[in-house]
Image 1 (cartoon, one colour):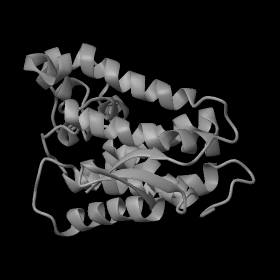
Image 2: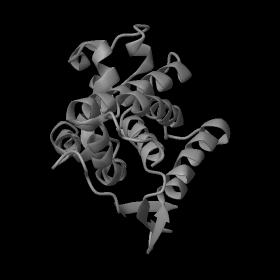
Image 3: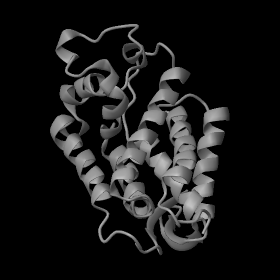
Length: 226
């Protein structure tokens, strides 16, 4: 298993990836203040009030009145700012820290924000329709982050990425190896893996959206597969 820690890929078009910083900060603040660090009744309540519950989103069921704090349709976005625990948050934010700045550089601030939200939406819709009628809430930025990873793979497959191999040994590898392995693992797990708490379908939805959107949303002159 590869854990990315740094990429040799400077910014060319923006001085600071403010949107990427803001997304990371927002996820952390939500986890601390709304989810109470993932502990207690507040964390469970937030998963239903702000998470994506397929049966509620499709208006097949209603949440209890005390949990109806947002319109049902809003959960297709808000779920992506919640996390199950500190490890879930940390993993997603690490990938976003390493790879998100270059996607923001290639797209621009506004388009990167739209890209992120659209990838989250695609991940949420994929989960909703692959778990039709389910009462299990989806939380996590994984769908959006999967889109960022796919976009990076489309733009910078040859860039060297430092990873912790087996979680211990720092090794430089091409992005196509690191991220290609990650994408392949998501596809394999979605198709053949056993049922688990990981929403593989949301990852696949984000990957497909990221591959498609980066083609049309990148700045003029930014090449694919540089």
